[in-house]
Length: 266
Image 1: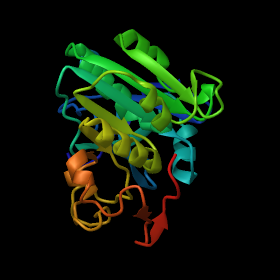
Image 2: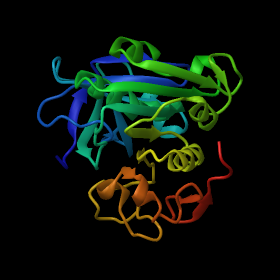
Image 3: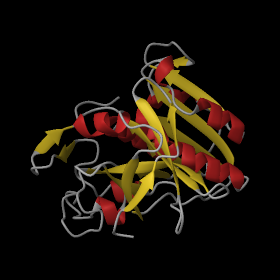
Image 4: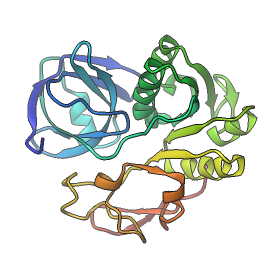
């Protein structure tokens, strides 16, 4: 599991201007929604959430947003090119209850869409809040429709659905959910966490931190003040665990260990 599998890209799907999904043939242990893979382009290696788990066709997919040198190189690849994959790693989502709510902001929809498809396959009732800055950046709407979910879109500019933030869209929903699953920019997740607490809804949240080894050895992804390693204890954390994480929604550390503020709520 810790040695990369060198795989050819079987298919590439352009999800939006800056997001592509790369699909690979997969043998062996399949990931569970919320887990991640380490992606190696023979120069560098980064963690990426699994966005597609297809056991029937023996495929997995990762959705990658172009944000820097590494992801730009990935975006230039074509079908048939090779990448190294190792994993799956981390603690994924635990699907419980009957009526559940999934919330994804931007590229945070990657693990959420995999979670939703698994939940619907197991006959859970699923509502989904899909948030983005504008209509063209809303991700995986067709897959969510095909899965049979109720979709609530929201965009910052009002170009599709509710005009406003995911936190505001959550406030407008009626009824109770047995469980909520959340992934997106951390300030957004902090706001969602607070509103779920007010509503008495237990949540599971997928955190992103700088990672190197993905095996709990280097300590690069340790959280203040718990010392939990995101690559082992997470990336999914439950509501009661987030209350013990000092840095949640406030800051994270860069590759040098320097604290970087996350800014205000979204």
